[in-house]
Image 1: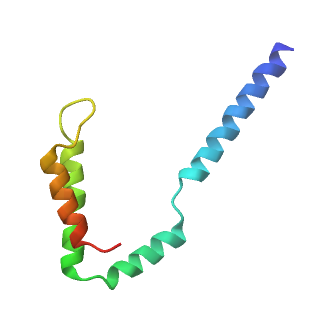
Image 2 (image 1 turned 90 degrees about the vertical axis):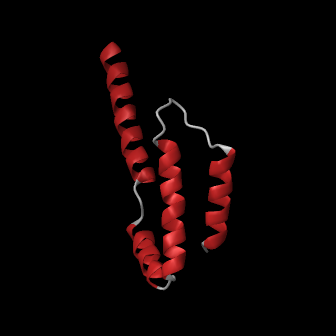
Image 3 (image 1 turned 120 degrees about the vertical axis):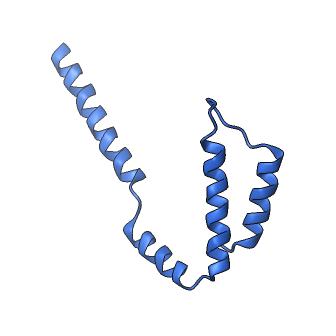
Length: 86
């Protein structure tokens, strides 16, 4: 009886892990279409998006457990988002 229960939980865990992998796996069709849409974007737009992503990495790499956005970070991100189109 205990063996059956343990097997049930192992199988359930295995199935949940498989479903989680499927849910978090990026769709390749979306990656292809996004890449093709980047080709039509202007150089300035791509530079602004790159700067926005770099600012997010700067905040993330701060040497504290849970980095917070400062007011300066928020202002920079808002200005950079206004320069990009999505």
